Length: 216
Image (cartoon, rainbow, N blue to C red; front, side, top):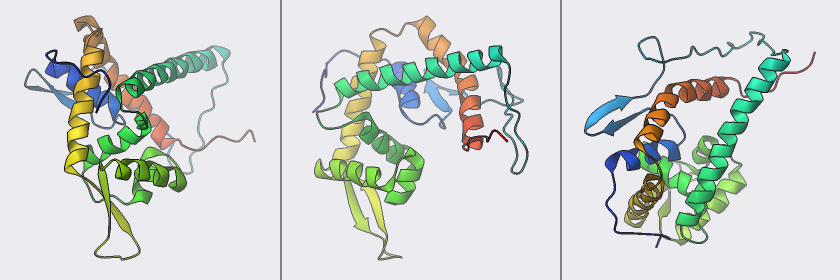
């Protein structure tokens, strides 16, 4: 079903790190060697960076310094490059016709549970309703999900993972973790864990500031 499936042993740490990365970074806890490792930022976390999102109606600070702009550009460019490289590698592991964006839907349903409307999934994935409709058709055709009418509202539909979809999820996570685990060394894992609090903080900051700032 998946490209590059192998019988090599898999470190649990590799699989959990991949599972955290593969989802949208709002799951901030995984188990390393049986012990819970919490990666959220805040006053009782270290290291942490304070969230500085503007409250509703509050004017946001606009970065004017050339140095600040260059630093921000370099940071987001690096994050974007990591994202592109990761998705490209994952796309080579997934079966033909299944895009990383399709797999992200399965990850979302595994993490947060079934009975999600297509509209809710579109919002969670930051895509249009039409794009989500196409993605769900791909997954439904492969037998990974079922779309059923809502008992409470006949006009609404709900998305459910099938057993085949859950099996596919397990296989994909294991195969991807094998690939990443082939080059991730202990120092790389430590760097990833150390970077998570900062990445979570920046993700929350962006989530709180989704609209552009006008030049007036």
